[in-house]
Length: 346
Image (tube, rainbow, N blue to C red; front, side, top):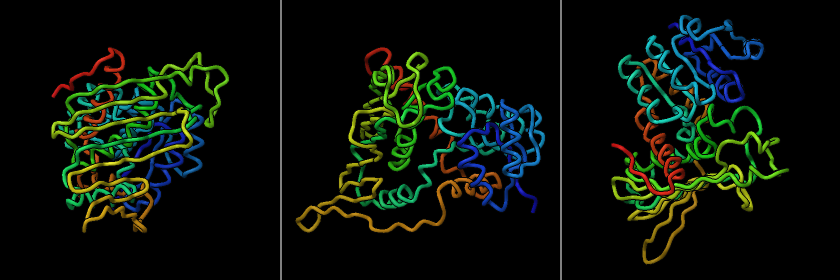
């Protein structure tokens, strides 16, 4: 059987350090083309990974591939995805789905009209802890989720490379870049309940200081346009609530990345995985001592995308679920701007 031909749009670190190496492990697929605004960079990547074609335009690339991997700045996600889908090409797009919900809707419409796969690369869903937590929750172990706590916190790790602090190209900072991962995962774990009201606040005080201590490169306060810290309280249609905090630059003892869910029958924590219950007249905290891991999450995600393109699976991260995540992010930013809670249009 002929291999699925995949083109890569954007040859930055996320493409070369995660996605291209992962697809190298998928026997049913082959990276056959790359493209970047920096053509020299694209040629270097093509030579390193043995890719045959370096394209100068997206039109040229779409004539050579069956599927497109989008790893560009966020501003270009929607235009590239819509163009590819309209051309009958499957799409895997890095998170977040797009700059805003309106662009997400355009992507969903294009995918549904074309009948092609659109997978958003929320890779946390493929982690072994996340998959085990999903099995536990779906079994009814914790009952109905009531309170969902999300922490995606870094002490002083503002990305000092690329365009992460450029609002026009990225749409935001810590929330849209990092917090979105844990937000998406929490929504998936709890059955993707729809949000209807959001109250949010954003900050950028630390990154606007002179001579900031930062582990991930040099930050220029004069060109820092996004938030480095965000908080939100989210009400869901099923009666549950979400408390979210995410930061690139918090004055905390150490990085903290976790989801904690309190349910009617018990609770669960992810990263590390633990189940908390009351049984036999006592309180029990059950640490999970071992979780089988078939393959690294990046390879599982790449295999899943190819399986979807071949009609063997449906996207684990459905476009509409990813759009709901973006609608929450939009609402957090809007709430922070106007200083009060906002309703999410349904």
